[in-house]
Image 1 (cartoon, rainbow, N blue to C red):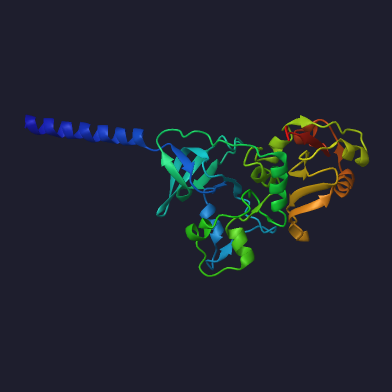
Image 2 (tube, rainbow, N blue to C red; image 1 turned 60 degrees about the vertical axis):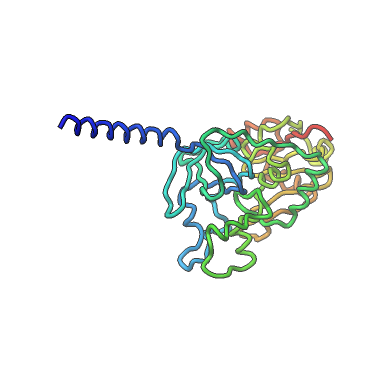
Length: 300
């Protein structure tokens, strides 16, 4: 009897130790091996397919508002929670690449990453020369507007991981594979992810260009290539003193996507409803109707 109890006790201790070992060895990190969509909802798989199996859940502007950004291959994540999703897993994650708190958290599909037990290094990024950034921006011209998009060539694996029940149109395929960019995503992709991936962060990015009280013509004389025109929820990128590139939501007007427009036209449009200001806090935090210009690029 005594030997039996001792054996049971040893088995119990062994199982307990094994359980603790498994918890300690659980992978706590992930590394993007593909361009990885990061969502603000754990229910993102339900956005694909719909009742007929070939529909996306889009808003009236044809956007999936659950997408926050697309993490570039090599981006590290910390895994905060693992959620079962049928045969696949969803990870609730944090990332230094997207340091903008949200109560619900951010979520990725495990098929886009590999998991690790130790923290991987941050993704090394190199800012291209000014001429290359401008070339990258112009290469995105005519791309569609995708809320949260910053990978204009799209992610073909989306069709395999979230397969439609039947063939879809070329336009729907673009949206299914997240083939497009939003306003800050246009800049993020052109700079290899060096610039912030959020308009609110761009308000304080770089240095201010003094434009308060100036006319449109005077503002045009102050700008340099790659200066940013930042207002609430939108950024426009100056190509030179004549032209601006931006990705526009469009919505009802159906004139969205990446377009190049005359700087004079852009400033005239802005000044009809906003004031040129030097202080970004006045717009970002106090909600004043204005816009700022930020100079961030250094070098040639």
